[in-house]
Image 1 (cartoon, rainbow, N blue to C red):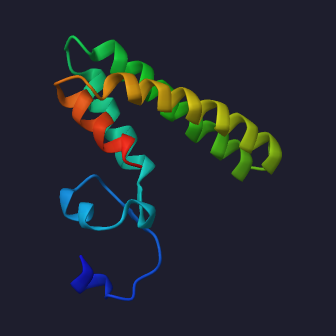
Image 2 (image 1 turned 60 degrees about the horizontal axis):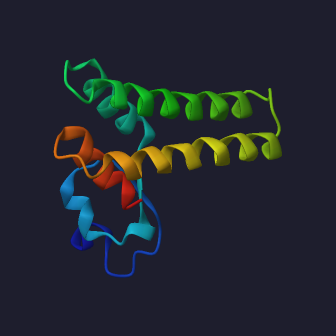
Image 3 (image 1 turned 45 degrees about the horizontal axis):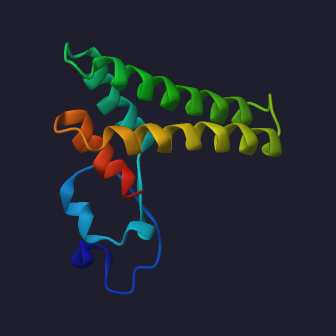
Length: 116
């Protein structure tokens, strides 16, 4: 990754969960929400013991994106958006923390999310 970005790179990279990006410092890497939603949707649609948990986390992610869209569309102001996002993010952090100990694909995804 350093060969591609250069040793002096000080910006942010938005990426999918591909493990090659793990060489970047966590503070330099943000996960792409579209990829996150796609991964959660796949886990929520799969028949599995953790399907309900994946659906709950997916609902939170979609709620977050809806708030962002409302802000971008001028329906809500920045302060309102920030208040709503803080509440959603706190709930997501709690869910991720609880799910990351699972030994399944949802747990693996939550372990990755926990880093960010």
